[in-house]
Image (cartoon, rainbow over all chains, first blue to last red; front, side, top):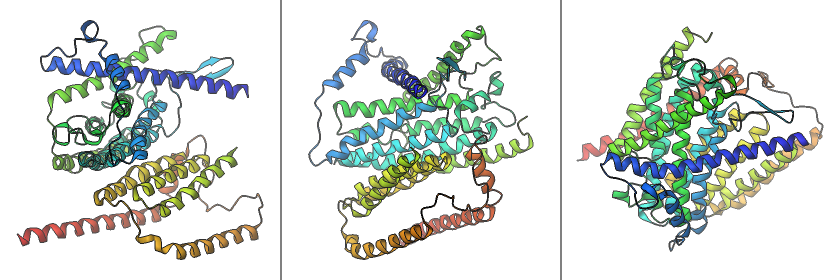
Length: 353
Length: 175
């Protein structure tokens, strides 16, 4: 019984730390996005709150917290409340299987613990795919429950977009799974140890560059970011599915979008860029500090992807709806399928040693 | 412990399945169906079939039900009364099948000996994990049914494309 209690306490502590880091990162991202966009457009970004505008996220958070909570007339109150929760929970729950640092076990009071992954389940990546697909319900139901034409259109667009691009995400990672021979994110990351030429984006026998590009584009589409932000499209649909939302409910959708960005960045880093593995063999720091290096490399890779999201937003205009569909089904899908075919043949002729 | 989880999951499955057909708002029906899919996945997890559980959610909850919702919202059906007249017939059928199941259970007696398996791998090997086991069984023992199933799906897909294409052809000829 003591063992169960101890393990539970450790897991709860891990979950608390991971959730804390994710939410702090979201806070930081809101500022970083506005600053980066500002610099790219030759502006300063937020400058008023605190020195150089660094306290802006706190001001934004306080504003959202104290805003009046409005439920529009004719809205379905139950679903209107449920939708933001359905959007946020799947976005946060996926972090349970992401390995943030080297796979090592720590002995605490005579029991073994893995400090850098909450739960190393053997279907890790499928678990994440399953829950990200549930995230679409928040958007669809939120759009429908608002009793507004703009919201409904946003919800419908989102439904079609998520189904089309989720397929591409799933097919893009199959190549990596074929090479790694496992669905566990910890095992996939471990298989990429020993220098950047072992990362699956470059790896022998068949580099997953195409899969990587398909994955990144589909991930941007799945998180509803520019240039695939058709569900919200503020210039045509006002704000799409969250037109009618305000206060904390809006904040939930907002948090979900950013948490999803972090999650897809973590997956991209773990699957294609070697996760916490450094681009050189071994570690620079001594053995007992090697985990610091691993965690830092993982963070660097994740932040690279997050920067890519901002960069795309500053660079590209939004796609038209038919362009989005044609691109997803007629360009990305054949590339992803072709990649699976070639990778499977390569993996057959050069089996893992 | 496992038994408690089984009764929780199956209880919720039965309840939400009834709600799917009994509720009058199609959106609520879809949400009941979503909850049911999750509990079926939970049932798979208690059986150590994690792969099946994940696929259950990805395919049914993540794709098929989203399409259902899409259609329901597009048609904007607020209330659906048509099928509620069929309740007496449905109740009759349901009670008949329930009696059959109960009779079978009673005739067999509540013995604890395991049911005979359908051959194949049986107990999934813990070391290799059930994803590998499913893959191996699917591509060796059940290769023929698997191929037949994919052929049927292909035919359905071609059928859908032909039906959709026909309309486009007619529309352009009429112009």
